[in-house]
Length: 564
Image (cartoon, helix red, strand yellow):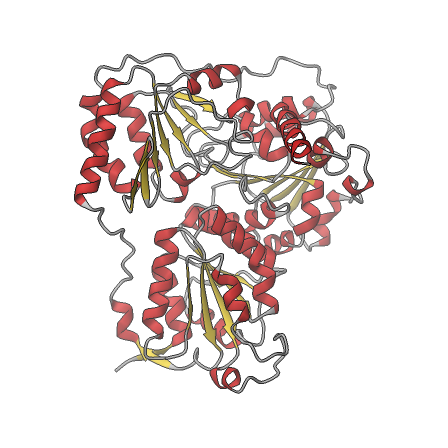
């Protein structure tokens, strides 16, 4: 019987589902495991700068590829990654977190090993991760280990949540039957309960038949749980006006004639606010109703006819149907909804944002102008990553080309996420299509938290666009509280020295501070092709911010004051 090591089995399984890049850092409890990556052609070890960045990168990779794998070492490594893992849990991103742990005999003897708390408790870190994992496994038996690995991979992929897998150092070189690889891991969803599903569809059809002013609102989980195609078809068939939330940006093609814009509660444009809130039926696909995603919970629907489609339940008005998955419901709904919607007479959707008026080339750059102009630079197929802060709010004003994938960590909101995420997204984009552009917008303050990962981009000759908005400190924090406070100041860096400092040889640096400089740069044909890594420093006034961020900051400050 042909046999392979357990470590190789893990990576063969990941390779089978097209996870080609593994993120993380080496540590003495995972080194033997890492050796096995190099036994599989086409797989690569990213080799991150630190575990937190590695977790962010795994998150970015998974958003494009459907799943990722992060490997850390026991204790010190795994805990450094947990902020990133928590963000993936909050935002429904499938990351398999593999931890190399001490041998089973060392644990049984409760040896006073390094990377422990010195109390003989080898389970404490596993327990910490359990609260931010869909499931966990600590492998202790080589006979059942392959099945545990398969279970963890399936759960990560199907639930789009992190999963913790502990592999003792003494097990990864033990052998398991290679024939186990002949049976693919079943990644399919289990069918809905037929009776509950039928009731859901019948109820939705009744609501659609009687609706005069229905809309579709797509949110984050439309992308995370792979129903973007179904959502597009739903719009095509019904012709209902369609909107996205900030977290859902990119889940609907924004060039679609029935796309109406980004809805953020009271922070929405008046036309969008009116269109959404006057609806008599709202089909909400994949909602994640966090404060920044809803304009501090300022949704003001005038109707109770709201259908929420979720990955593992459906909610219609006040009735919840647990276990009824939206993927199957939407697919069946598409086959019957045309008849129910035939009486709908399409109404106009809000007008697309007006183009910026002509300005003198010497006009200083400001955020409102910038975010309206970014849409002209973007291309179909781009991956656009915007950091927590002015970028995440500004990007809501940008009109995307079709098939543009937007990433913004609106719910978890960990400052510095976007730079690490860009690395993972760039790896994934290269695997999907080497011509696919990955574009980061981050603040110069946020960049300082995770800047080391630019080194990994350079190491692998990845070619993202790194737009750094330099507004001399934490503007989003200044807007909320402490406009002149020292704690919102940062040390200014020489950003255009970063790429050569990290060893880049083929790179470009640009600094833009006027509308003319922006237009000249972004209209350059060569600049629009991702032929090399680029750093673009955008100089902006200190307190300048997108209008919806200014409004959100006022809301947040007001709410905080009331709570005090």
